[in-house]
Image (cartoon, rainbow, N blue to C red):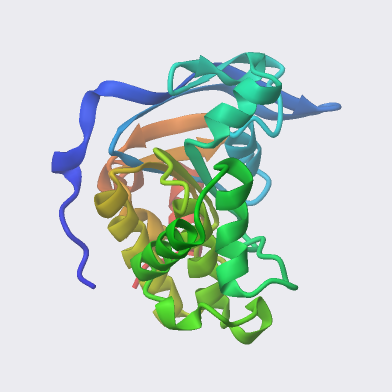
Length: 259
């Protein structure tokens, strides 16, 4: 699948995630030191940074899995750290979290893995409605023929795609991808990159993509946020970020060189 232009679908008048003055520490380790970021409706943003720079901490705070020490994260108009119980559950229905390890249940086949979050969150669905939703999500990731297989029977790339399908079954407005291409071969990486764009266009999602994969960032994202020493060094287009003379940016680019 050839990557398509995606700039035209962004609505810069509507912010779906707003982060202001975000700080997070663990003991004496300062991880996030004043993060500010806006994600617009229909936009994909990649958050880049070396290992331990706080990328995964940031995405967990956005999803409400960690609480910030200071600052605020507003998702779809709701301040995340102020939500509890049913309010938090209601917001998470609008957020798809694609985990690095796919987080599939080993004892369930593909159909059961996809049907589980649907039937847990939406009551009184008929078997026909569940079947349709599962098949639609699998069609979106190109794996309808794997519906009866167990996770152990799938390749790494297929597990990633099934994990994405499971998040899509609830039709989220926001997608959070945690290292979507980690551990995959180049062909599988290209398939996941194409899928991220397909999801953005087909489901009209807005996405934050945590990655160290420069090819993924360049091919799937409208803007890049470069995380250095707990702050965003710069937020902008790929070429704007990597035209910098900053040594840490240059070293990051050289280490993750794009052919």
